[in-house]
Length: 140
Image (tube, rainbow, N blue to C red):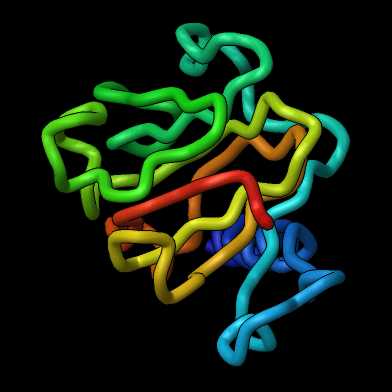
């Protein structure tokens, strides 16, 4: 029982270490925006194998589970029919295989910034960020 509690606490501490304040916040909500950053050894790449290099990949399930979509520059509205289907408000994990920060929003048209994913980050989103993404792009 004690080992289980320590394991859970260790996961919480490790998750907390992945976040920092954005370096160049530009809008009123950015002060409260989390940033996901790469931290050495990340999650095993076995479940993430479909994500192409030089792309931002978003996954509908935890641990890189399918369905998924990948982007070179972003998508202004995951709810419209021009992008991948089934991902609007369904993103639970991400892998940023680019050298740029990516901004994620909970409204179409890049409105209402909710978090930033730094280069190289691969992992699950925090519960409060899951299933909220409606648009994403390389941060301006």
